[in-house]
Length: 318
Ligand code: UDP
Ligand code: MG
Image (cartoon, rainbow, N blue to C red; front, top):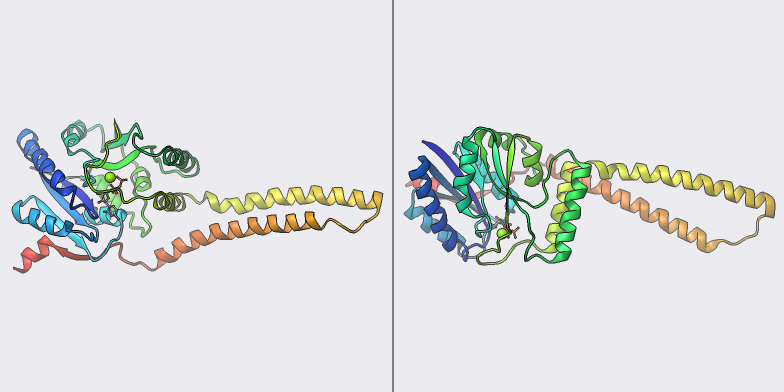
């Protein structure tokens, strides 16, 4: 019997889990009856500060299909997904949010598409950004346009992390063991044939989104530095342009001085040039710094997450 691992990162989801758990169990029952596949439901408690862990303990105790890993602190959704991939056992794996924004009811359809053998992964993208502030949509769209221009990872606008994929693709994702993870890019980078299912944006069932505008902005920078080195070229390009402008200036000043003498003055213009160049130099050093910081973090080879508790080790000890 084939097994599908469902990876569910949870951070402060005690309010949404009571909605999610019955729904995923319903889908699991349906799938084992209709397609004879078993679901292995793996929750990752990402250092929640509420009662999520207690809810998961209870769920695992009452249903053998449910497993959980609990981190020693909040490591972020990227780390939670990586832990899920590392610890999942299925022939297929799917990542799913706990807030019902990724409807479990889509799973049978996704599985059927994979069964045709034409695709290695079925991913979802939302076609509308209903319920989202317009300014956020604008920045999100601009980000996708930019990153697709400057990197070779194919990152789809509106793509969610919700996707079902084959074991082969999971192993490929695991082979990218970088510390600074940007899954939207990693999924595209590893390639394979992906079918996109468009669907309407759904509001989360309970609790609130963990993503503020600022967090999303930093995450987008993460995506750019992780998948493109184009910003590093900015310094060279600006340098060339400025050299050209400087050359024109020198010519103008030379002619002016030879023709009209050399009257003292021009302090404001000198200040403007100094400030302008100073700004550009700091900006470029900043970009260098960003890449250096990422390299620094990678070279430490720190673990991406630390597990404090799981129902499996506990049962093994007993
Ligand atoms: N999440 C997580 N760790 C975090 C933040 C979020 O595991 O540090 C989980 C969260 O519990 C949810 C999923 O990632 O299951 C998506 O989070 P959220 O719904 O806040 O994001 P959005 O859907 O608004 O993009
Ligand atoms: Mg959500």
